[in-house]
Length: 240
Image 1 (cartoon, helix red, strand yellow):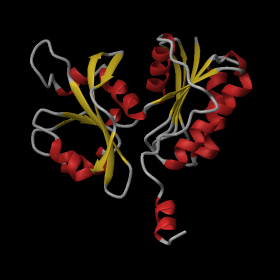
Image 2 (cartoon, helix red, strand yellow):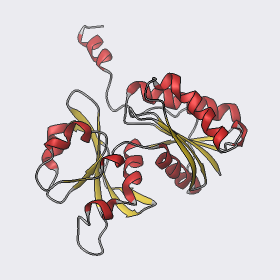
Image 3 (cartoon, helix red, strand yellow):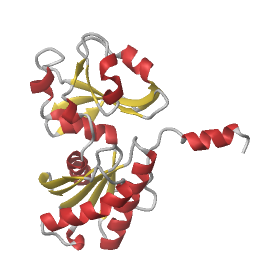
């Protein structure tokens, strides 16, 4: 299964090519350009690097949120148009789960086991959704290749999320860029390189879900914003 994976929900976007679970190449998007300009050239360069034609791609994995409003729209639109053009399948991936899987292999080595011998480490992942809020979700880290959600994704004030964390809790995610210096005593943060979601993790999750039989409808797949944009809320407040 040849997989093209796209991650554009964070400021540090990326694209990756995988053969089943094996990562062949990953490219970061040009940070001097917006994703709308950098994504297509990065996809083209990636395919050239692994010597694939567009029609060689059989599955497109893409982050569907939470994350940047604009980034989500750009990534998902590109994924759906590409998949339609080459007759590939498409799977939407939870951005929080991609963050969790990205750090799964190094959790024990970087921060130590947060629980007793024989139990599974738990990682709390949070993404900053602006206006003082985060979307957060906990995950059990079963192995370097498998994580499991332990609860639903929640939209809540950052202060409330921080207050819920207990000593020995392990945390990760882009929200730590703003919140790392506010973590309560005893909370362990993953190494900073694991905070952003990566296309390589999106691709690995897409491979897992596809092998398990999951299929997404290209025409019905939509971003998961978790809140309305500031512009929409202001529009409502004006009685429009």
